[in-house]
Image (cartoon, rainbow, N blue to C red; front, side, top):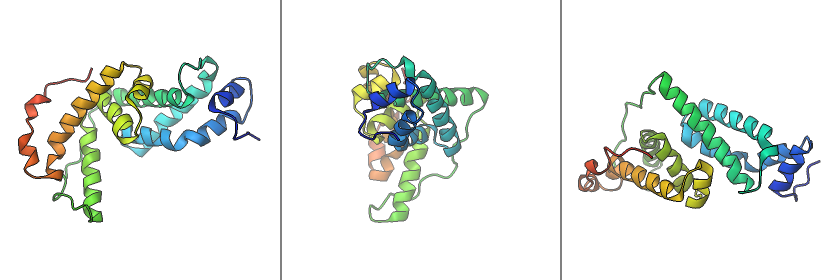
Length: 200
């Protein structure tokens, strides 16, 4: 039986050495957060499940190549994000995914559960309009709470690139979602400041 006291690194090394239960324990520990990242990035449960499965298979096979340069969780998240981005790019080549036609309702009332649900749906829809690189960065930093440094390691880019993607993505979201905070706020945001910028 797997010892829960063993660290992620010890478990990964044990898996690479042939322990049949070690990888299962790693997945058990981190599956919920890996799933959350996959779902936020893919936006569709079936696609997220497929991407997560692809990522876990890749991690299972690549465990022996883990060098310990980062935390096991960072390594796993990077594999998951890459699997999601690969699927999104392949899907975009095949066809354009239609956005929901129905828009958000009235400005949200913080105590109204239906309004909160409408707000969440509006945020998810707006997030889906971002370039995939910006969406991934915002998902990891703003939604999942990872540091810029950890996110940079997961995405395989510089910290400055993560900050830039988050800033551009937030600016785009502010244009689309400003009415949820204050109907007058949206008018104060200048769309031209972000409309032509591309994710780097």
